[in-house]
Length: 412
Image (cartoon, rainbow, N blue to C red; front, side, top):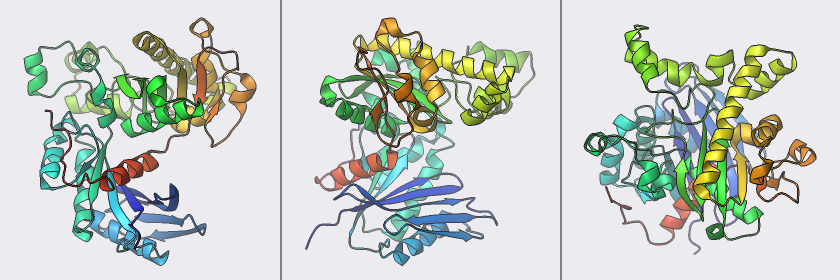
């Protein structure tokens, strides 16, 4: 009898549940789907059986995550790949914040759940939802290995000089204040795929990864290990994003409270939900912003320029951090699809060995590809990210190598 090779990947949000079922024998998707507006009368489930191409939709109230996962299990069963299938090896869960406690994928037990819960104060919007998905899945399949893959884990290799803020360490340690970084599964996958694209061992390649979606982050990866990243204690720091401000003088917060009379909650909402591209021009969709620019909209043009300016600063900074750069890789929704962003971010950096070939950059493709001229000293690449495959790969590697009883690195 062959060992089970399928992994179900769950990404549980506060009112949503994204999922994919993959066959790890062939790195092949079997099903993908999304349940959204959980807990509302207008809940919706969209499920696609990849092997048949059949897409099904359900509209109607889904009370909670338990009901959502049961609905997903029913859809999978209709395709013959149900949650109760003996071919299912494990369930892999995306968990946003693992702090310094979890530095690698970890099989979930009660102690792991307790620690993820203990990290809620530094990830109040994400870890509670992740925990809900885990508990629901464990209740439905208590016999099955459940693995947590942490967004922060890839960044735990940063040296203290990069991870520490210039704060009194007693205060920083008491309140767990340090740069954790996020989008780690994406940065890990893309840095490794970039090395593969170059035909080189990841251990020999230095890459700057630019994950540009509605949330955006940059990382400096030396020989497969992250040495710096733009997001910090929370996903607010760093690049200009869809609705987040990114880097900001901390005194702005004091000014808004003292002079503007704003509460901490109001400032939090401003910086996380009403800033970035949206705050600058009223749009956070790069396609709409580019359309407005083409029509002569000055606010959209300024928002784009601010976005690019911050991006170029991080590229330059990470060139300095790495010393030698072999490639710059663009990924995620904007990075993979917005040729104008890639062109503007690299323009004028020829002295650093960076250049973009206009023809190659204009090509639209779902494949990893180089967009730099053959003569460029540093490769510029577009590498579509695959966080679900990365989670499934890490989950399957752990379950298949006897790591079931290990808690992970408990260095904290």
